[in-house]
Image 1 (cartoon, helix red, strand yellow):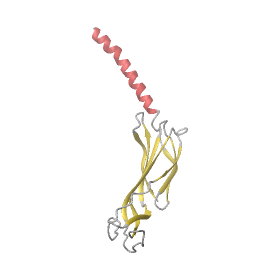
Image 2 (cartoon, helix red, strand yellow):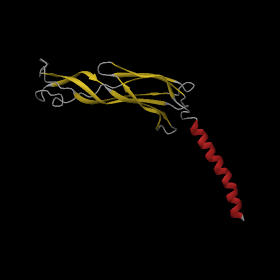
Image 3 (cartoon, rainbow, N blue to C red):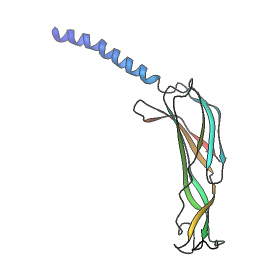
Image 4 (cartoon, rainbow, N blue to C red):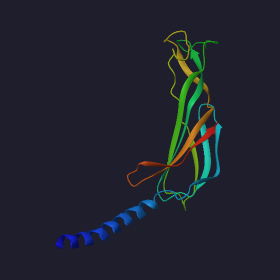
Length: 171
């Protein structure tokens, strides 16, 4: 009988605890996030910038990530000692270009974002098609092509939770 009374008193407490936990997590995450404008990406030469406006977000911090996994970099090979460039020696090198930006607590669940990719890593002389490893390489331009944009909200532990995307973008 005593065991049955303890079970009956614990069940309502457990149910109340689970309800409180689920309600507190709902306010952090997005309700029904959607784009109000964009996203749109522009080619800036060796970087791309993606902008847009979203609404319907929750109260947590927001992380916006963009990735162009199949970009190509036009490279130049420079002769040792800062000499001439070698014309016709510079095939496009495959590069992955990414960028991300974190925003604190969107106002009233809305956020206007602008994320610029990082400059891609310079390929080696061999990857750029230079005559030998004594030559130096520079990136002249990047062709971004298609990529993806993802919007995350951070949970209480700071872990990103996907709320919009992946969304196809191009620059």
